[in-house]
Amino acid sequence: MKAVQIKQYGGPEELYIGERPDPVAGEGELLIQVKAAGLNRADLLQREGKYPAVPGESDILGLEMAGVVIGVGSGVTGWREGERVCALLPGGGYSERVAVPAGMAMRLPANLSYAEGAAIPEAFLTAYLNLVKLAGMTEGDYVLIHAGASGVGSAAIQLAREFGAHALVTAGSSEKLEFCRELGAAGVWNYREGSFLPWLLEATGGHGSDIVLDLVGAPYFTDHLAGAAVGGRIVLVGMTGGSEVPMESFDLNPLLMKRISIIGSTLRSRSREDKIRLTQQFWQQASSGFADGALQPVVDRIFPWSRVREAHEWMEANRNKGKVILDITADAE
Image 1: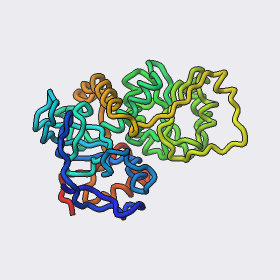
Image 2 (image 1 turned 60 degrees about the horizontal axis):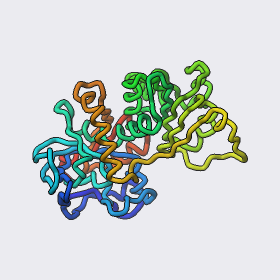
Image 3 (image 1 turned 180 degrees about the vertical axis):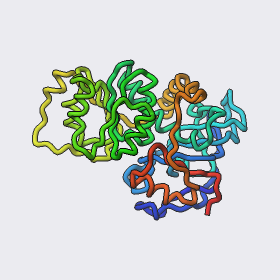
């Protein structure tokens, strides 16, 4: 089969489409003909050699895809060839075919395209894991969401809205902020105008954030502590701004007096069993929302996979609002 490969670690110019062995559906797995694959920041880091594939899993880029079942492994029940699916992957999405544990596959509603299906797994499962399962989001919570126009951010805004929470969102342009409002953000702040802390406290009437979904990391750490509500939960899921917090000393008092929880979370390194359990819990709650339009996968732009270098450049430049998708059905050059 054809698959996107990396000549050597580096920039987008190192990507090319070449031949790889065909996967097979092992016990408990489905073999999928991939129609579309979603891009993620982890793909960019893996291409640069900064985020290696999980040992024992495919080293091909791509953590989510949508396609058609073309093979059913032994021990699998409830699935048949020809069904449309989307799924989270440990790797291998930038390819013509991929094998995936049947428990991680989600039936694609008839109203969604393959590109929309590929925009669901990583973004929505990340948002669901961190907001609902780890932070315990409930109605009325003030939820601070950074990088609100990203794939994860756009999913998090919608989940917060559906749970009756107040999504307070930061992004870097007026266009992206308006996009976040359209998705249901209760308030927005352009981080290029300075610290979000005064805005956050004003927007919450001094209450602060009950939950922070932090995709930025180090630059915001001290403001997160200052802006957290009593019992606040800060969930770190990304470090686009860096990992080292610049400080000469660190005051533990806010953590103690406000009972703040700091939770580190990654999805990629979780076990297959964890991912299967998470997928099934999420889909049981959310599948009807995708079917009736209450939840919408947000596709920013679709690139034929022959232009995978351009797709990576687009994401690296932070030009996307929602998910960047590769069309795997297009001819590979």
